[in-house]
Image (cartoon, rainbow, N blue to C red; front, side, top):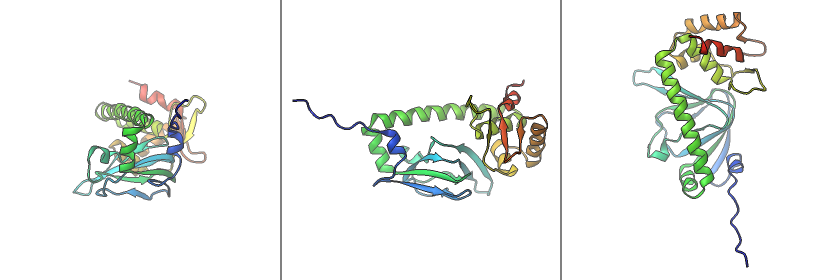
Length: 217
């Protein structure tokens, strides 16, 4: 008599459903998801929308560390023993976020290979992105940094979609993201618009042609 096989873990279903140790929460644009100094008691996953991760220094200076989108995990520090959040997470747009209890996520990573493989692949992707960001910050001009950030916000790379409308974001926030002044951001945005790399028809739309700024030596 054949033994009954345990049901296969459905990772996509898990990541898009609420349960005993997880909940799906809708956040409005500008709403704080968690604040710097909050306890690391959960891991979060973005289903829809975009989220900014930022940090505030003791002198009151704020820096945007990353912009996350659909399919991204964030707030992972608790899995490595981090007791409190070292940054804040704020909804850049309206966002749908799955919040998983830290102990539940730790259990899943130990017992469900599909989940641990998914998270490992994500972490490797984020490591590569972080290295690229560091290289960009050190070696690229502010013009190139802005072009790259706009392409990332527009989720560049979809061959079937040559342009995207990015979330409404102020020039001040863009300046924080790339380490430049608002006046420089304003200057380059006008330049990109004049060259046809972006337009403002129904929002800030980014054309794939903006990539030429990033690739230009």
